[in-house]
Length: 446
Image 1 (spheres, helix red, strand yellow):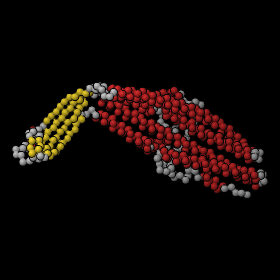
Image 2 (cartoon, one colour; image 1 turned 90 degrees about the horizontal axis):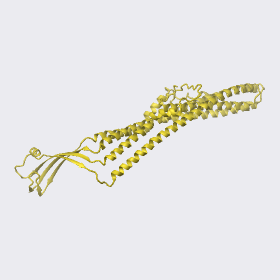
Image 3 (cartoon, helix red, strand yellow; image 1 turned 180 degrees about the horizontal axis):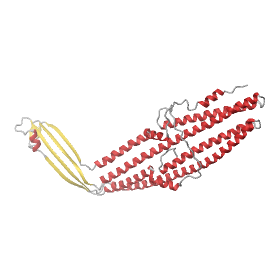
Image 4 (spheres, helix red, strand yellow; image 1 turned 135 degrees about the vertical axis):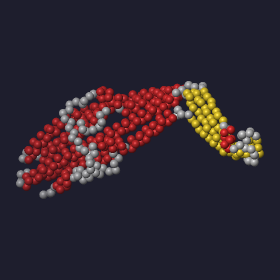
């Protein structure tokens, strides 16, 4: 009699998860927090937000006067002009000149003020973009987390099926040894166990891959030693999805960062239009300067000292300038026209963002409803198949059912249990997505 490799199968049954180093398991909240802190795309957006913060700060500093200074040290040889006496000498002349001056904008069509407002809106929009990326990462991590839970449940289902088959092998072997049933029955059951062993290995591989997917999202070097918490998820008797698409959209449109970002960029575009129109308005600026000099002519007696010359040669300047735009190659009008188009484009972007959000909520709601229907149907199917399998198993034990019929019933039960697990986690994820749109943080406590 051919001996079935029971040792290998028993090893498969006792090995899952026990080769993984024991560490404190990660909750969904911990996974999301860790992923947000270590995600490269989020870090890049943080840097971009800092750039926008610098731009905003600079727009406010642009209100300050522009002041620059200069200093020069020159030598003149041959016929040279003494800047103090304004006489020419055929000698080497050393000259020093010091200057401080600048300009202050008094009025420029409120362009500086509007630039501050535009930079502020762009900064706030960038912060909302950061929230949107964080939300996307959170949803992706939640999906990967639930995939592990699903694969764990599928592993358990397949292990239970293989356990039942192993028990049936022992029963059938005793019947064969007693001459009650044909040896072919035992061979068919052993073949079924071999197939179930393959299925178990497959789902375990899927479980390991799902661990790899999640740890990669967390930017961990290796999935070795990584484990997650397994919360109790009881869907219970649910017949309807709470709320409606319109109600959820109404909440999401007021809180979702992608909508806020589009609204803020629209506000920035409108401010930019004000800046462009400000170019038509005359600007007024104030100029201010201070300078002094020192010169030294070799072999010329009676020269004032360095300090005396700096004090005696001081000069001041103060002026007011008015710049009136008349014709600049039609650039001002062209810029105003382009900014008007930018405002219109921002309006379309906001409308498109809201429409896409509505479609996403609509799709998630439909998916959740379909998953709930599938779950309820799968629950009924599992209950029926479990009862049917118990009946078939009893008949098989007394030789009233062939191994083919027994294996078919067992396979149907496995499929029903797998479908139930998949529909359950699909429903959980879709409802969590809907909760997310409502502004409820992601967790598996409820």
